[in-house]
Image (cartoon, rainbow, N blue to C red; front, side, top):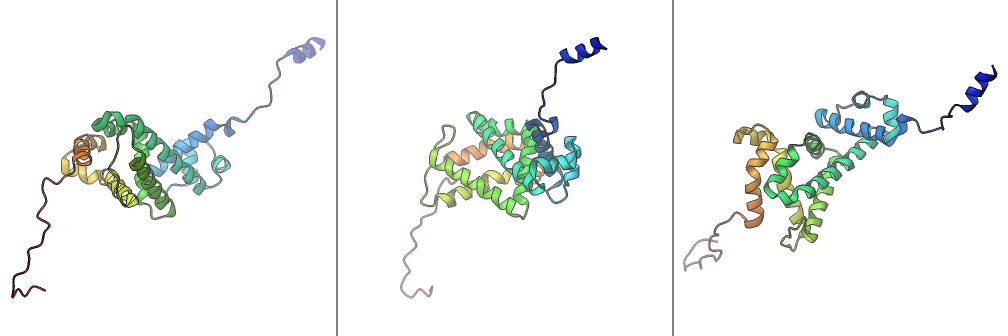
Length: 224
């Protein structure tokens, strides 16, 4: 008995620690699962239970970390936006190859699918996402991006909104482009059109413009 007691007294004691389910790693696993589920099924159809199953946790644990489905979606919005922004900056030096590199990454493909679902969602979340994207583009126009500088406009916000639409359109119309161009997926599509987009940004698209001076009306011209 004394030996048993001595063994117990000399055994290393486990220090009280944080539950594995409350760790940042668990929260990240839930976040990644939610991005995937939202991207695949949309926001209305995706349930907390489905996200929990994809993450391998209980629905209660999802709520424990994020408060609600809306809170989880806001966290996903911020996570995906930061991920795409970071990847764009990282790949910008590769110019026309940058978009292909992004879509060759399965994680980034899922992030872009999430982005599209959010932009097309008629909710304050979708509007917040688009507004955030326009603000980001406007900051690029003002400060430059990855060594690129941009012509300034008298209406920088309108310029940023226009460029944001141009930047998002290929991904939003991916299926239409694949059918029209005969490409197999969005990565192949972006590889095909990226040189044209870059040329459009650098050189514009108009080769000449018509004379903007109107003809002087002749006497007796009935034109009002």
